[in-house]
Length: 367
Image (cartoon, rainbow, N blue to C red; front, side, top):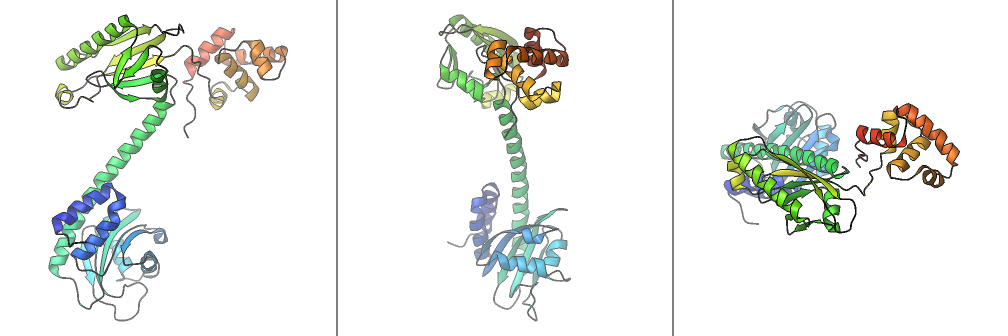
């Protein structure tokens, strides 16, 4: 690998913060730049340094752990890394005697970042006698500063990604189809139920990335709604909403669709067609969401047998069919149903299904 200049090394630090797979290359490049024989990028918990994570160049991670675990005396590498302020470089010549807390060689190190819980450091070692130069200190301090910024930026993106992933998992558990439409009316996001509806191609589908409704009248209304959403957004007016019934080619009950316009910055929308223009929710009356048993227990204190009966009724089964599926008599099912009525506070099966539907979102527990 050719010797990198400092700007190249800084660029590699940013790339490595975004892609940990490149960290090993960054450590090797840093060793070459500073003419070090060995190097390590290490992160460890303050209270348990034995749980160290290290990417190294010609340096066994076990050796670093030995320094950290056994070298707790003042002045050792571990003690200095635990106490030095971030971005402050320090060095040490070869130890006068064998010391498990000190590397054998000249050391140049810097704490890139630290807090009450963790320490992140870059360690460079030369086998030859002597110390690193002041120019090495200055370059390492500059490199550490950029590396710290890269790591902190990446941490914010990691948190955002984690939030985004949790949000998508929640939306995918929803019993309604949910689509986000961009500035062209194109689908920029679909949850699992929306994907199922579009793939069934029963009057709602995608043409490329464009939402298509086979019901011509409904499609015209949707196009008018999107045009109004664009106009209101550009004028700073409150976004519109609309509701549609989509007749289906299969003669199944019509889809029920509701669309909400989304406020957006028209300047941003002009630059990015993926800026959300509207959110669309689709209900398929053929799909009967089944409430989760733990939620029925939590909200209504139903027993497992009572929950099973409510699940069957919400799925559209009659009481006799539900009883047969549960291997109980109809009289036993009626006894369970009377208990359920009392707990839920209703007096009919229709009211029961409606009350449960209003009270629960039928979200399955997230994995």
